[in-house]
Image (tube, rainbow, N blue to C red):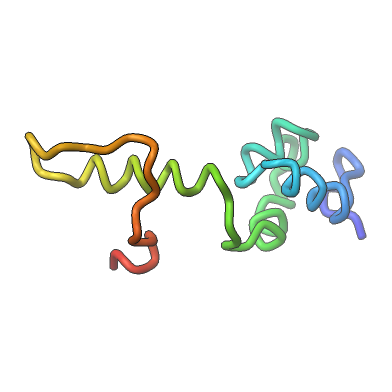
Length: 89
């Protein structure tokens, strides 16, 4: 089934890019242009990506936690935090 009719991108193509490491709609757009014309497919791309495991997501979570740390706190780079963003609320 087509996700992006502007560029003829299918669900399978989006999934292949996701399997290749694209974790966000912006990364999918960089890989195949889906979502860069009318934008009508961006929510569908988000739904296909879901909230599954993504190596880059751990890096983003690490930056989020580091940014929230008090000034002067030691920050360990390259380690994944035990807290997920969904748990932080």
